[in-house]
Image (cartoon, rainbow, N blue to C red):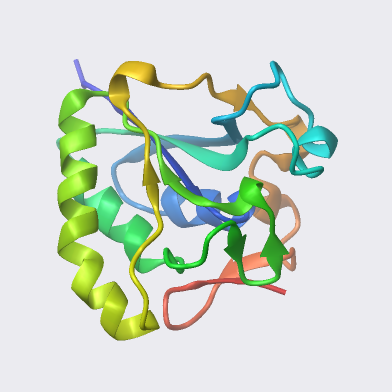
Length: 173
């Protein structure tokens, strides 16, 4: 029987992040939603007010025999700008922050190590240090799935707002 793990990443617009992770071999399923805030069962409209404290987040269920958590972390850090606080491209607000929500102590340790490893690459690329937040695994916030029309949004709307540019970074028009 295959073992699966779950990872949660916030890296700006969740539509592009979901598409990015869904294409990785070994990723079994993805979903978009909201994490890290104080409002229970928030709606997209509530999260967009930048008052709930939630981040647009992608849930990634993966088979660690096919893709490791370290690989997912490398993809996370390589595909968005982790130096901009509460912003990715034209999207501004705490809901677009860079954050990792580890589900285990091992994931938390790996996230801290990879952030440190990528620090110099990020400094060279952006001229600033990463501001990516890493939650503690022992205090994992609830993941609230986003409304159905947000799930697999870019598959349903191929010319949608967020995409991955040729250089691998997220671009939100």
